[in-house]
Length: 344
Image 1: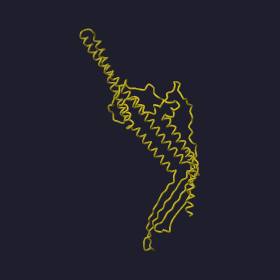
Image 2: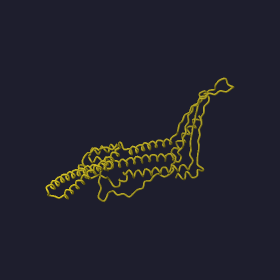
Image 3: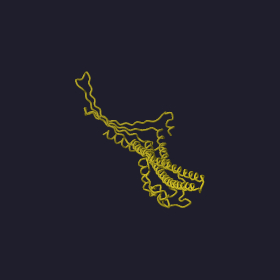
Image 4: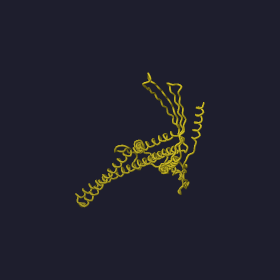
């Protein structure tokens, strides 16, 4: 009866202490001055930043390149791994908010000179321990872990936007170089035809050697321009291949530069919402929220901690022998060379 009563008291105590206080201040978001409209008016509708905006180009080749980049890019894969790591850290920290239950089993066989046989003992037991979150330290650490995870999400979003932008920009540069190369090749061909005409006129005595040399110089400049554009195009393809996580290779083309379509108006949303959507701003805010929570967790280290425990066991070789313990441990800092103060 006394054991049952003690367990009830222990359970009630744990439930009461689980709703204890939290040290440290909650994060307070600063209100910044905002406007509802820009001076040139507002565009209603969904923000383009929250959509697959590269589809606005209506270029299947560009869309496929971006999808390949999001699948293969090593930096993006590392960002995803950091997200998974931060998500696991939340569960690890939250596990400290709950009691821990353990079991044990022992079997021994002993001999001595006075006994005729072995003395066997088999003992099994179970125990529960709970470090009461009196000052909200583990709850603050749980908040910090959650904000760390949300920060990695914003980092992933920010990197995604940057990669998509880089792929789209490199692709447009590539299509521009294709167009410039085509013009340079046509120009070089024109200079070659012009040289043929000038040489024929020179043979007929209609022009001087100076005109022939001038035409050769123009042709040489045209051929040099062609080689320069070929080199620049190859460099751009190599850089784009690296973004895609692929070895340097030819890049599949879609629409030519002048056939790329863009909407007449790009929906931007309300100016007052821009800061709430920028991943880099949200990333910085999440980190600040995590540090604010850790400040409260560090404050809790200045105060004593309370651990409650209960153990019970049974000896199978002696049914009359049983064991049960209830305990409470209090541990507090006296001197640690200002370590807790420095944490804060």
